[in-house]
Amino acid sequence: MAGIISWFRQPFKLLDSHRARWQLVIFCGVFGCVFLNVFHPFNMNEWFSHVKAPMFAILTFFSAAGMAALALTQFVFRALFRVELTTRIGFFAWLLLEFFFISVAVHTVNIILLQLPFINLPEYLVTLKYTLMVLVLPYFLAILLLFVQEQLITVEELTIKINKSQAPESVTINDENGKIVVRMPAGNILYFKSEDNYIFLYYKSDTEVKKELIRNTLKKLEQELNLPNFIRIHRSYMINTQNLVSILRTSQGYRVRMDASPGQMLMVSATYQQAFEDRVVQQGA
Image (cartoon, rainbow, N blue to C red; front, side, top):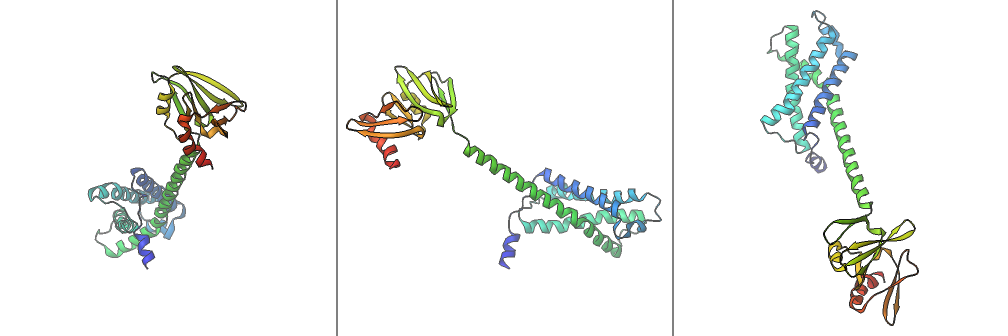
């Protein structure tokens, strides 16, 4: 019992948007019109045999009346009474009222065609029964389609997030004036080498190592990048630890070898040795 109560208290947001409501109204109206005209349920074609109008027009008139009543409840009454369908139990309570309004609209069409008095309870109860029997299927099919649509949107959003998380992180490198010089995936960058007021960027391009000259200082670039994979190892060098292949410890300190540069070793100076040990050596141990 507690599980059922908990289920009814779950959030319900399928009819929050105007688009979803219009989809509900149009689907129910079209489905009802086609269903009535194709199958003539409950021998409806015999109910109005004395009415001088084509059966198609009569049944379409009933469908249009139900569709108009549904649109009225979803857009006018909900706005007028500020109805927010936030939970499933709220949705089902509103559904009962909605079916009542639609049955009144259909009953009105019925008494116009059959020229009956409006206050006719037995006739209304019959109309209510058949209205429910015709409307329940398309209404809940529409809700099911909205639910599937919502799930597909959720899956699409999750796929986009996953693809973004798997996409290589892009790094933008500016010159001293803030002008973009290079933008590339972080994984392609090997290291930076300082040359006075210039920096050489060494990076992988396919199987080659290329370099790009940038007018900037290594200190300023270090502050601008501020990424955990980029670490200063020398007054003249900042490396990308993603492409760190090997670390050699000697009596003079550490030397590192970068990917795609097998013949070159970069020196870790004494000034940056402690930070290098903390951030790279110990974490890799």
